Length: 132
Ligand code: 523
Image 1 (cartoon, rainbow, N blue to C red):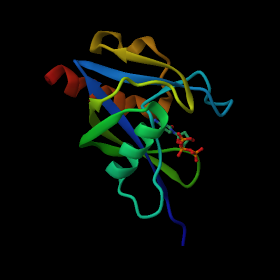
Image 2 (cartoon, helix red, strand yellow):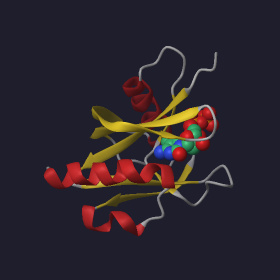
Image 3 (tube, rainbow, N blue to C red):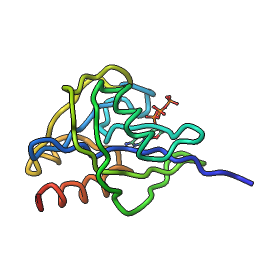
Image 4 (cartoon, helix red, strand yellow):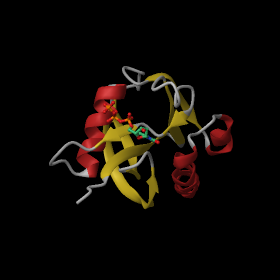
C-alpha cells in the first residue's frame, strides 16, 4: 500500500494582506514564492501541523480558519492542502527555509513568482481576502 503524504500550507491573512514567503531551498525551488508550511508529522492533523510549521519557520502564532477546497500534486507521494489562517501574535521572520517575506495586498499578489502548485490556492485566498 502506498500512503500519500500531506504537505499543509497556510494562506496567512493580516490587515487585508496575504503573506508570501520566498524559498531558500532546495535549489530547484529556491527563489520561488510559496504559502509557507510543511509536511504533516505522524499523528498530526493538518491544522496542527500548520500551526507548528508556521511557529518553527516564521516565529508566529496563528489560528487556522478554514480549508481551501482542493488538493494539488507535488513530487511523487506528496499532495498539497491549503488552509487560511489568521495571525494571532508575532511578526513573521524568515527563521528557516525562506530568505524573504512579503505581505501582499490583493492588487499586488501577482508581483511575486509563486510556485505553480500554489497558484490555485493563492487565487482562492485572494478572493476570500477581497470578500473580507
Ligand atoms: N511545497 C509546495 N508548496 C508549498 C509548500 C509549503 C511546500 O510546493 N506551499 C512542496 C515543496 C516540497 C514539499 O512540498 O517539495 C515539502 O515542503 P517543505 O520542504 O516546505 O516541507 P518541510 O518543511 O516539512 O520539509 P523538511 O523539514 O525538509 O522535511
